[in-house]
Length: 84
Image (cartoon, rainbow, N blue to C red; front, side, top):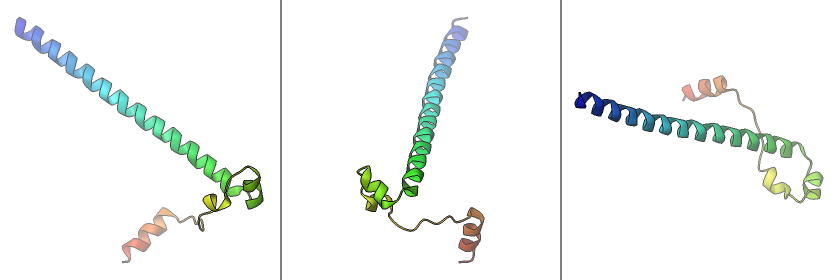
């Protein structure tokens, strides 16, 4: 009888610990996803502003307009990389 109680107590403690780890990891990834989406929205808005508008709000345009922006389809990129 004591063996069953000890095993149940250990299993419960292990399950609780695993649940806490999984909940913490899920919370971290949801917050990272939210932060990344917020950053992407901000950068999209900043890229749509002209240099004069960026200067007016106190942002150096060279920090926002770093280089050419291109949209490449993932399937096209996969095809191109497979041709190497």
